[in-house]
Image (tube, rainbow, N blue to C red):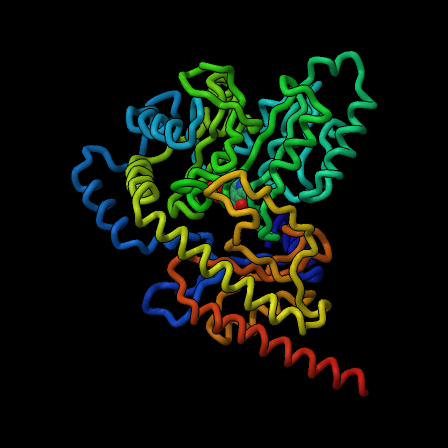
Length: 444
Ligand SMILES: Cc1ncc(COP(=O)(O)O)c(C=O)c1O
């Protein structure tokens, strides 16, 4: 073993001792397998859609170019197909412009590493995705100007904004206050109380000094008319001058990130922004400048997915997902009422429902397809569920804050209600077993 291997091995051993060791696991989730996958982000079950498969194969067969793009967007990798997909997205999401990235990770890192300037402030929900932190770490914004606020808490945001306005110096007069949020948080499975947070921003920061950035990774394709997302459903898309690029955006969310690796069933992402931000990223975003652009096969797949999202099949898939999500939430609420919280509980997040009248496409308390079930023994619970045929992955620190160990349950539109019932009865079995074990221990 080399000296390096020995040192790395010791560091890995440290992770094992802390119960934080990660390894790659492959499960057979094909149609021949008996395992049921509750860990996939394929919320609309599009990766197994027969209609999508047929359309994709037909389009591949008739397309002159299907392989790699052969270069960065700035060199040989830029094609008419990339530009035309961006134009489709700009129209679909009602944005003045759109810029493709190879992943949501790349898009967040690119944006947060380059767009906020040294005299700006970046305020973020404490649970925003790791990619935002990675971007900020390589940005020129000093650490003392990057501040977290308590998850989904409008009062927490107000308190941070009061703090920065009282600390403001004269050089802050022209600084921008960035606000980084997600529409649906992937670990707790709760929606952002977006209107309430935007109201707080409006109260403390003049509109021309705000830049609200919303990551819709887990809501792309799922919420809003045809899956246009939460911001579009709330009519909050904005961030550009009236008449710019021929579109109007009166809303208060300036930048949106829509990703393609989850409900869309492909890979890549699109950042929806003003033409100026788009041009800035093309000039400064290293993951975009120095990496090969999305391959043609992916562009073709995305065109086919969007045909489905915009069709009746898309609507049906969204409705099925909401239906089973509500079903699971109800069954779980019933189980958790009689479960000691120390054994299993939902994150204690306050739910701030959307005001009723906001959108026909977004109910006040929309059902979400993600559930984080907190338990101190997430690995043991995951193994127990696997023995009963359910893939439910444990999530442990540092992916979640210490004390936030959980198993994460994700639903897919194609799941039958009987499968959901099966999972809940396995959870009930585990709760009963653990409660009995605790009872025996207490008697000893
Ligand atoms: C909220 C959020 N943003 C961004 C990303 C990164 O997206 P991608 O998987 O396309 O790199 C993820 C992926 O897990 C995510 O959950």
